[in-house]
Length: 173
Image (tube, rainbow, N blue to C red; front, side, top):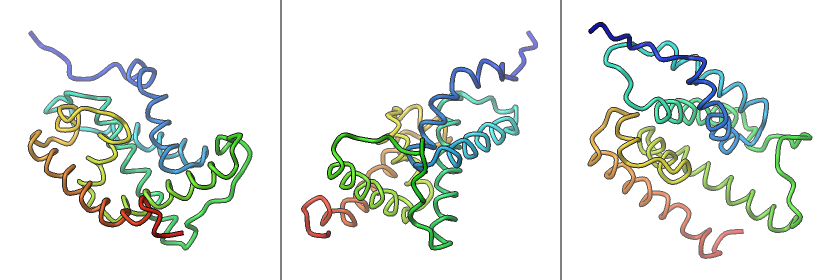
């Protein structure tokens, strides 16, 4: 039986577009950049080799989106624009301004700390802790063993705990 390994791209995009955009938006916090990172991830997935076949397209798309978004964030931070200007529609407005400011500060600190992690640890941490993918899905998407995923997650959590520990305990303002 001659089975094609080409996915149905229209279906793949329809099933994953919302999640891919949400990943980019959580990292970048800017609609326009999130749209660009999403498009980059889909374009990169389209160029993926047909052999071996991709076992988990959702996991792969989350990984690609995470990496493209983190790359954009690194470039933004490298240009000394660590905070992007707030524009209408870019962020959710909360009824608790003080809580929103604290949450935004913590989000910024977490993203900064994630950017300092090695790429594999950053991907694994984001995919499991933020995107709620299983270790099996992450292993498939990153072409790693489940044990390697668990090790990378442990190292990422340990590094983040050390770096962010004082924020969690109220030691930094």
